[in-house]
Amino acid sequence: MSGFIATLHAAWERADSLVCVGLDPEPERLPPHLGSGPGAIFEFNRQIVDATRDLVCAYKPQFAHYAAAGAEAQLLSSIEYIHATCPGVPVILDSKRGDVGNTAERYATEAFVRYGADAVTVNPYLGADSLEPFLRHADRGVIILCRTSNPGARDLQDLRIGDRTLYQTVAHLTATRWNSRGNCLLVVGATYPRELAEVRALVGDMPLLVPGVGAQGGDVAAAVSHGQTAAGTGLIISSSRGILYASKGEDFAAAARAATQKLRSEINASRARAGRGTRSA
Image 1 (cartoon, rainbow, N blue to C red):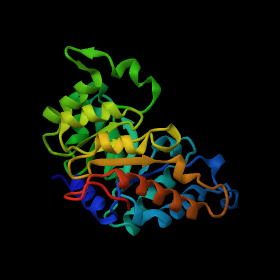
Image 2 (tube, rainbow, N blue to C red):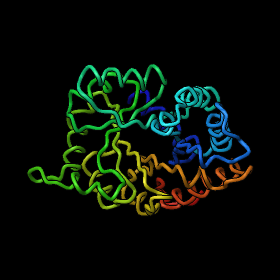
Image 3 (cartoon, rainbow, N blue to C red):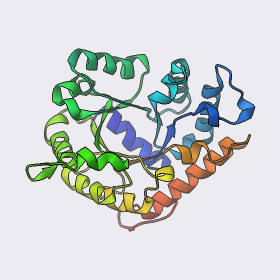
C-alpha cells in the first residue's frame, strides 16, 4: 500500500469520514469582513480548515481558483498550513494535468515538489507515457479522470471501444496496467451512480474521488451505495461550494463546519459497517 493510500485509509478511520472539503475560493464570494487584501484567500482557507479538520479525510484545493487570482503563494501557504496543523489529513491538488513526457515531468514537479501535494488529479487522454512522470512518485496519489461529474461527460466518455465505453476502458487500464505501484485512484462523479457501480466492479477496492454532491446535485446515498467497498470505505466524497459558502457572513466557518457535519452524517448513514449493516454518525 503506497504512502498516500495508507494515509488515506488512516484518515478514513480516524475521522470516521469520507468527506473531502474542496478549497475553491472565489474572491467575489469571500465574506466581506475578510477584505480583499493579498492574504484574504489564505485567511478564508485557514478558518475553514480550523473548523473542519476533525471531520474530513482530505482537502482538495482547485488550482485554477488560485492561478486566476494570482494567488499561487496563498495556495502554497494553505497546503503548508494543512500539513502543519492537520497531521495525517492528505491534500489533493486538483489541477487535472496531462501532457507529453517532458512537460508532464514539470507538472509532476509542480504538484509534488513546489506545492508538496499528497496527490494530484491527472487527465489520461494522452496515454500511459503522460502519466508515468506522476506515477513514479510512488508515495503520492495519482487520481485519474475516469467518469467526470459534468453533463458533457457523455460526449466522449460514453464512446465505445470494443465491448467497453471509454470510461470503462480508463478504469480497466488503471486497474490492470497503470497501478503497478499501487498509487492510482479514479475520479467518478456522484452524478452518475450507475457508472460508479460499474467502475467499482472493474477496479476492486481502488479508492475513488467522487465530486458532484452538493451544488452539482449528486445524490449522496446513491453515490455511497454504488461506490463504496465492502468495508464501507473506498470513497473520497468532495464538496466545495456547499461547504465553503454555507454562510456569507462572519459565521462562515461555523456554517462550514455544520455543513461538513451534515454531509458526513448523510454519508455515514449509507455506509456498510462490518457486521452491522449501516449506521448514522
